Amino acid sequence: MSTLPLSGSSASAGLVTDVIEFSVVDGPGNRFVVFLQGCNFDCLACHNPYTIKECIDCGICLDVCTTGALTMVADRVVWTESLCTGTDACIAACPYDSTPKARPQAVADVMARIRRASGFLSGVTVSGGEATQQAGFVHALFSAVKAEFPRLTCFVDSNGAADVAVWDGLDDVMDAAMIDLKCLDDALHVQLTGKSNREVLSSIELLAKRGKLYEVRLLLMAGLNDSDELLAQTGRWLAGIDPTMRIKVIGYRAHGVRPSALPLVEPTAAQREHYADVLRAEAPFDLLVI
Image 1 (spheres, helix red, strand yellow):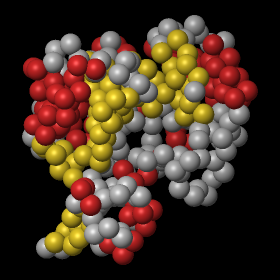
Image 2: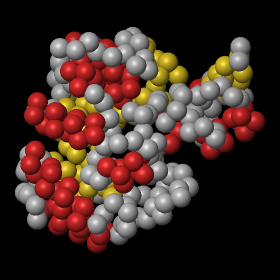
Image 3: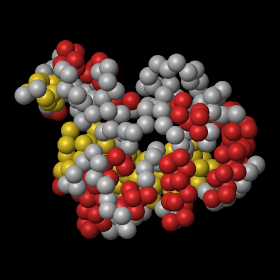
C-alpha cells in the first residue's frame, strides 16, 4: 500500500475553516462535519469560494473588521474568535478566495468537539475546500475517531481529484466517500473547474470497486452541463460501474457564488426532475433530487 501523502497538513493538525456539529446533508444520519481550507479546483459554481486558497496575510480584511477580531501580528493576520460577530465582511472583502478565519487545529482539539456531540452523531464527514488535499490530517482524525468511537462512520466529501495513493492511504480508516462529478465531458469540465476530470472518473471507478463509494453528486446548471445527451452519456457511464449507484442530482443555486463569465442559471424544479428522468432511463439508480 502506498505511503499516505501529507500535502496541506501534518498528521496531527489541519487547516480548518469551520465545523458543523450536526448536519443531515453531509452523509447518512446526523454528522459532525469538518471543513478544510484549500482546494485543487477553482469551480465557477463554488458555493464556498473562500475555502479555495490559503490566506496570504495581505491585511486587506483588517480594514472592514469593525470589532477588532482581526489583527496583524508579526506579518500574520490573526483572528480572535471571541471578538467576531460573524458578519463575514472580511470574507466579502478578500480578493483572493480565502478567509482569515481558517486556522490550524490539532486532531485532539477537533476530537474534543466530536466528543461533546458524540452521543447524537451517526458519523464524521471531512469536507472542504478539498479534504484530500490534507490527507494526512484526515487519516489522523479518522484514526482517532475509530479508536474512541468505533460505531461512528467516517466519510470524505471530495471533488475526486486525488490519485490512487491518497485513497490507498485512507482506505483503512475511511468508510466511504461522496464524489462530485461536475461534468463527464472533459473540455466542459475544464471550463467549469479549471482542471481535467480524469482523476475524478478514476476515483469513482476505484472507490466503487472497493465498496467505498457512498454517492456521486451531479451539480447541474441550466443550459450549460444539463443537456439530455450529456446526461444520458453520464448515466450510461455510471451504470457501467454500478447500475444501482446512489446519485444525488443537485440543482445549481446562485447564492454565495462569484460572478462568472459563463452564464450560470438555476434549473427549475421541473428541470431537476427531468434530469432524474433522463438518468433513470439508463439504469435503476438510487436517485435523490435536491
